[in-house]
Length: 194
Image 1 (cartoon, rainbow, N blue to C red):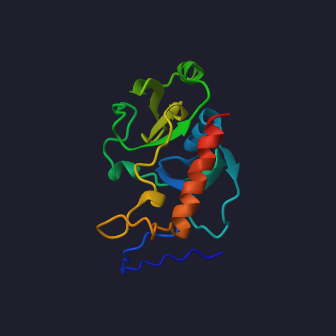
Image 2 (cartoon, one colour):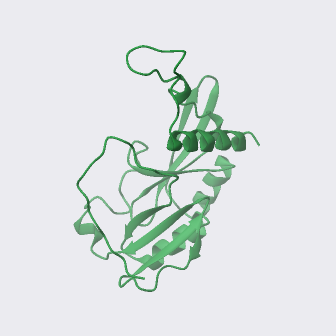
């Protein structure tokens, strides 16, 4: 398997035919140290990666998403803030995972001697507990019970008007990707209730 990268500069007005998040790639100083973290702390499972890659890395999968680690021992040259004393800021870039028991998360992080901060989000009487911490390379991870706040689209394609005025005789028809997104959202919302 040969990896080819092609950049194309022609942007179109329509959105891309996306289905779901496949993986997140992260640079790391030590693949072995990061592997232990993603396997032992977060429960990701190592999976086979293409043997044609000529760089050190590892692939993991769980919870419907992949994590691809790419070793770069010189990562500090790109981000001088990456170290064990980097402040944990919930408003920083992060990857978020839903969990079943926030209190157990905090207990396990404490057992592993890991620093974390917590936050609470409240909306319409619902409460979301969040726990933020760093992986070995300073990437922010959030674990939360985010399913407590329902995902409600700001607008629905079935109500979207055409042009400047709403025409009852010619309702907006969702495109293929809008239907896939709404079907996926509906399925996810049903799954949250169980």
